[in-house]
Length: 207
Image (cartoon, rainbow, N blue to C red; front, side):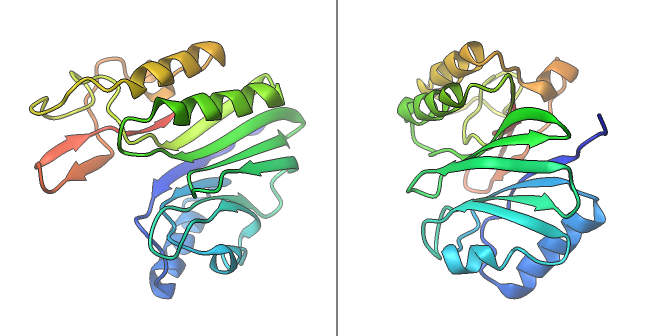
């Protein structure tokens, strides 16, 4: 099985055509096979316009031109077949029942709410479990810190998040691990900077 490069990226909107082109060009230069994009801020018609150049397949959940929106981009000529795709109505997740290089798999792109909503992850877990594939990849913006000691530059003002328990349950039921943390058990690195609080945090994951 050949290596497959999967990228997750919260782009904070790409309604601007120039920004959209720069994002697609960057992903192409990085030889991305599959891109999980969050916060596209695109409606359905604009989401479909992402199918160009190196992108052969586009699967998305659109919400509005002002917020949310997730999309999965598949590179042209990648050995990747989609049997069925599922989306929510809130621009929060896309789930693919697919086959990558001959192996059946479930691929999920999520943009989780930033407020405590355990039900969100229960719904994603139930959807993935219903599909029933052994190989599962869930990536995206989880919008939460899972380990307050390692995944945030400051613990000030950070209260216990009940949603983390739902992520733990999902991980256990689907036999998933935080792959970056597995490879870097004690490293502190971050994916998001909060300007109002001047803090860094790791809130984006691959499981």
